[in-house]
Image 1 (cartoon, rainbow, N blue to C red):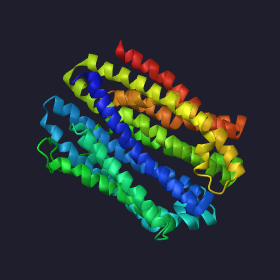
Image 2 (image 1 turned 90 degrees about the vertical axis):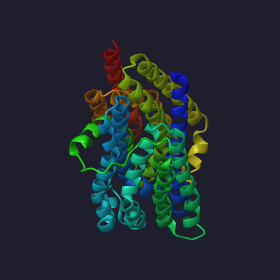
Image 3 (image 1 turned 180 degrees about the vertical axis):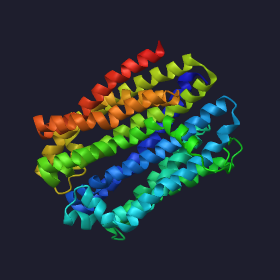
Length: 430
């Protein structure tokens, strides 16, 4: 199969898989809006950064370990067999603080994120349940990444989509016929990664499996080597959380709870967009790692070019869709028909989505840097995109332009990162 055909096979399947993951968050928001109105959306948006942290850590360990596994396997190094067990061991260790926080202080977490007394009371059950199941969210990233890197992208996609479908169906069942409210939404959500793990796990019993669960002492060195290559996946997930947390605090001061609910609408659609670009990056990663391990630079650069072109095309389609159906998209989550929420979200989603013209290029670029062992460059560009840039720009623009400055912070920070990324990749390719 040609490089181009391999690229589209992996990328299309990964886009659908990542869309499945983001869709169950969208469905959560839709049902929560129906059950609890704008306060329910506020609860979800305030704790969304914790989802991002959990997914980011799981993605960094899972994708990084699977990338290292793919490179070493292509080079014929038997050490590759130790990375799967090592990744599983560490995600369970890292999950412990999240589990304890869910069991002991869910109310304090919501308050820390800016929730008032009413919001805290509404969100305790939801927050406790999803934090208690943190190990399964992280483990799902590890299992799906290794399955994808072991030449089974279709199964990885099937597992993700099945988990998402389960979540959508049981969201409705738990929240409405059974009357469980936000706690029901949380139960449906935490079951999703378990379903995905069970389906993806069938790969390890098949005849084409080359991943070995080789028991060994967990190695911090192997973890570090993996995380260096997983930093782009980490930022791909964590940036949404950092942006959400920063914007929540800024918007609370500028427009109160209704402003945060409006941003919740924007953030949920943004998650779908980010998942599509992550699908391009994660789909290209196994191929880049494989050809990089074989020393085929021509194929590596061909995949990079295809990735960037695909990301730009997706960005254009998304922006056209948002501008063409702005009112309809907002109405989906505006169950109370709040005029103020609609006005805030209308302006916000149009300004915010302009950033995806540059974000797609950045996500694919950081994935390329990690997959080719350019850990230092991947780290710097990831930090600029996911932390330093967005924090600085959002504070400055919010003071200059108010709420519109918050919406414009995402496009501005992504543009700055894209310029830096262009210079780095151009230098590497010379």
